[in-house]
Image 1 (cartoon, each protein chain N blue to C red):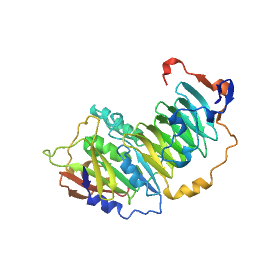
Image 2: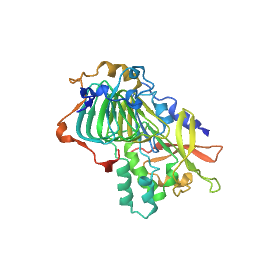
Image 3: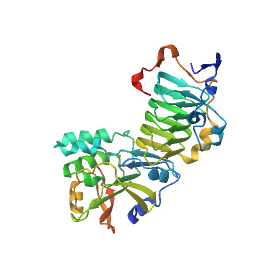
Image 4: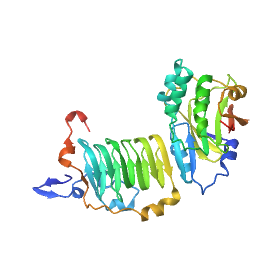
Length: 175
Length: 192
């Protein structure tokens, strides 16, 4: 699903994203400068479970669950998420209704809006961020959490029943 | 603008850094408050009682049962929740007496005899009551920012009125600050 035709060839999702936001979602993370990200575009709506083993930027809508385990997840400014999510580092620039579990860190940026509960060793709210819920922090738990990350079985981001759950949003969603 | 608060410092200065803290913040989440508590193992509950959803409906006449129901919905924590720190900021001033009673009746379910409860009041009608957001910067310092949303109607409560109206808690210590705000620490009343 997260593959695209380029010059007649099918390429992995990690090679698709060319915009700078998707390519380097975490400016303050050294590892992200060399790791590219899959992108769920602003017109895409997914209902179901998103799991994977690569970084992901979501500019569209997801309803269900998101589990990227040891990777980085960015909810872009146009992202609308109604789901519980888990990843190593999570940055929210868009809107999230659901619980957020970051194994290392969660950042809610100045454009981010979160209604739910956040669990992470470190949580950063930027000035202007909107948050309602609870924040569970354990600064001493970082080492423990990063050494017990589960290894996902898949090497590519995927969803369950993609033919049923992935739909190209009509133009009225506007991303 | 920053505000020095010695009572607050006395409440927070011996928090157990080894034990997980449960903190109630009546306001909205601010970067500074989250950053302050990021040094602790803790769970922060932000109730955003200054929102239209929370205060807007209080402008009409509500029965006692309706008020209790309203605050139960806003303060719907797991029944096992027991707060170590309770930051009320100036929310008591945005509640009339019936609302004040209902709010503290619901809140007191989550308090214990050791809960450190902190808030502000304004006693003199001549004191301007600013529409501001409080953030915890340091153990004895709050940052005050003007709230972007319109100010809700507010009520001035004397210390006597507070003690006669609050349910499950009473005024412990109070200090008049230079800007006219009365800084208050509250105590949980046993058996409430």
